[in-house]
Structures are given as structure tokens and as C-alpha cells.
Amino acid sequence: MAEQPEQLSLYSVKISTFEGPLDLLLHLLKQNKIDIYDIPIAEITKQYLEYLEIMKELNLEIASEFLVMAATLIYIKSRMLLPAPEEDTEADQAEDPRATLVQRLLEYQAFKEMSAQFREREDIWQNAFSRPPLEEEMIEAEPEPLLFDVNLFDLMGALRTILSRVPPETLTITRETLTVQDRVSFLIERLESEPTVRFSEMFSGDRSKLQVIVTFLALLEILRLGIARAYQEQDFGAIFITRVQKDETAESLPDTGQPADHLT
Image (cartoon, rainbow, N blue to C red; front, side, top):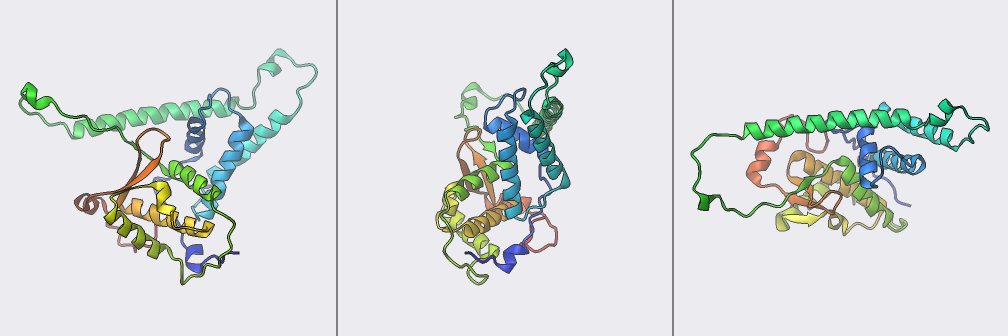
């Protein structure tokens, strides 16, 4: 049985851009290609609780709203398991325990899409500068590939797959042999020699669940500092970690005055 290092148990992950429970539900629906109007509540509840368990293992700060949503999903699931009354009125037949949740998801999704459109317009106009028209031969250029930035839930989903492949732990891992700080240094060195690495390959040397978790925490720290970037070539495709150029990294590093071994 692996012994959890004291340093890891005290390692608290705090991410200011952490998304909420509705984001997680929309992520699960999109990932499983589920119709928002016909949610298989039992399966979605199961996956939602699995994500909460991963967040707990990573020592992520779980806001109370995540727990409230978990209770809501379990309540809806229990209502759907109850047998229907023998004599249903027309109103009862139309009632669906999922209706309120679906309405919340639709409203949240609409606001989120609108916010993304405004953000995209802002980015476009911030980089818009007038200049004389180019000659036609100068306009021809090879288009850049469309890349999708990943969010925390994408990374956690990929981590879930990695953890499912980890064999039962037989090694005793102590504080002296496993630290997040050492893993950060190792991953940075690897990205220096390999500018782009597949997410799953970042865990190639890990042989236990605890090692995988420490590597993931180190990876979150590297992404937070802007040393690397996570992306997908297609939505819900393979995740890649790519090193950010040094000049870009220097501009993105926040001047917080806090030590690098804490995520803020």
C-alpha cells in the first residue's frame, strides 16, 4: 500500500478560473454526445461523482455548489427510479424530474456562448490595425491548423483514463522519493528536449496511482505558470502538451510574490 507523502497531502491546488458544476455537466454531455433534452441521469450522475472523486484526490478545492449539484443529480435519479402512479393525470405525465435541470443547462449554455462571442470579437478588434491593401500574390499563405485549447475538465477526463490503467500499488513511496517540485523540474526538462509531448506520454514512467497524481499536479503548475500549453487538434481528441517560447512565457508569468510550489 502506498504511503501518501506529507508534502502531497499539504499541496493545495487553487485555480482562479475553475469552472462550475454546470460547466462539468455540459462537458460530460458533449463528451458523451448526449441530447441535452434526454439526459441519462444515472450514467451522468455516475460520471459526475467520479470527477468529484478525482478532484478530491487531487486536493482541489471543491466549492459547495459542486456538492449541491451532486445532491440534485442523486435526487433526480431517485425520482426517476420511482414507479409511476397507476392513474396519472395529463399534468403528471408531462412532468419530468429533469426539466428544471435541463432549463438551467440551456440558459447557462446560451450565456456561455454569448460570452465567448463577445470575447472573440474583443480579441479580433484588439489586434486590428489599418494598413494599405496587399498585392494578391502576397496574400497567399498556408492556413494554420485549427487547435482547441483544453480546460481543466478535459485534463481530468484524460487523467481518469490514465488512472484506470494503473496496476494495483505494490510499492511504498516516501516523501524522499516523490515530490511535486521534483516532478515539475523533470517535466520542464523533458519539454526542453521535446517541445511537444502527448498528454499520456507525460505519465510513461509512473507505476502507481500516487505517482500519476503527483505528475498531474506538476503538470497543472507548469500550465498555470505559462511554461507550457495544452491543446487538442480536434474537439475531445488526443491532448498534447507543448512548450511555450521563453519570451511568451516571461510575458505571461504573473507577479504574485508567492512561491512556485503553490497553485493560486
